[in-house]
Length: 438
Ligand SMILES: Cc1cc2nc3c(=O)[nH]c(=O)nc-3n(C[C@H](O)[C@H](O)[C@H](O)COP(=O)(O)OP(=O)(O)OC[C@H]3O[C@@H](n4cnc5c(N)ncnc54)[C@H](O)[C@@H]3O)c2cc1C
Image 1 (cartoon, helix red, strand yellow):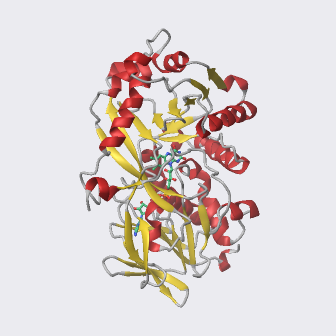
Image 2 (cartoon, helix red, strand yellow):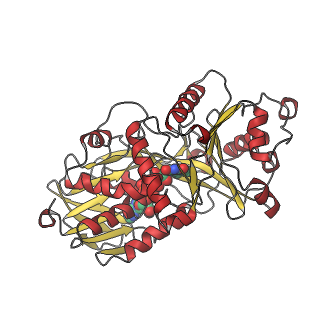
Image 3 (cartoon, rainbow, N blue to C red):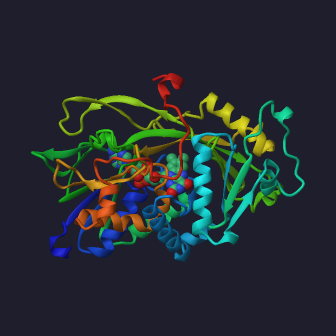
């Protein structure tokens, strides 16, 4: 699209990976467009999905479209002199218990795919619990017995994809924030949240902040992650829930011993253990998670009431921590794969909010009823890795020339099955008020 036709001013709500990457893409393609990024807080935003000690970077998607985009993004991260300083290609080991279940089926499909797409030397097979254990703890390490665990072993067979990596997500968001700050066309407005969008007769004119100030722009992009439903009625296209994450301090000796381990994840139990980084090990569970259902005014008419789940974080609710039941399950699982951490006190825990789509496909589309409004959200626990490419794709969508395949995949309405590659455990998210009260 020629610059003369592109909006002269744009507001982006949200300084996560969607918002920052899009702002940079716009500043490159349309240097005369004035971009304002608005966020509740100043980046890197601690309770945003994009900010964390680590994120997985990998291209082993079953879906060829995501696989191609993820590969392109991974290559860009590797070639980026700033991001690559925080990128560690130590592989990812995918484990399952081998019992008949959808997770074992996913595991079998993944191995086949990995063997077909990657060089044979990059895929390592681990055919027993002992081999899985030794891959982390070294040869001859003593695997806990069934008797000691009081249950069957569940980390039974695995493959490791050495092309997979982890990255320091906080540092990379800081790098993107600083790149945005260096652009003359980008301004930040941080510290006060957007209260609502300024909608008049089906046209979006900008936003009203919680302090009452009015900000106008020709075009608005909502990239507010798990908070997006507060600003736009998403009609079930995205659902906010949180999963539990914990950090353990490790000693220098432990860090040395485990420094070459790969990210290790058990598809059957949902446990995901990261290699030690900066003196700590991060563990998360891909559980059904937690939600916080509240009744709000429909953002479209600001009259009718709707029920949505919205983030309740350690910033909005200090003292939030991992629920006891989740801690119990995490420790049970650790007893088998990281026994020395199973009883260790957590350094800290967090409920990390994500914007989940029913099919795990992002939502990058114009609003179907409101002109001047675009949405880029529903990262669904797998969008971070697309940081270097997602902004240009959001911009393609805003300009109306996103490829037909991606337009369909990221449309407002969608049908189909889960296209992501971080399957969640069965069950329904638990209401946080049932655990922590109002
Ligand atoms: C535990 C966990 C593990 C994950 N692991 C991986 C992984 O290994 N690999 C991977 O690729 N992806 C992973 N993801 C997914 C990835 O992190 C997210 O998809 C991605 O970061 C989403 O970015 P975002 O920009 O949509 O959201 P966010 O980073 O949350 O940004 C949204 C921003 O909007 C702001 N905002 C919200 N409401 C308002 C308002 N009213 N006014 C002003 N500002 C507002 C918020 O403050 C926030 O900064 C994981 C996610 C989680 C939660």
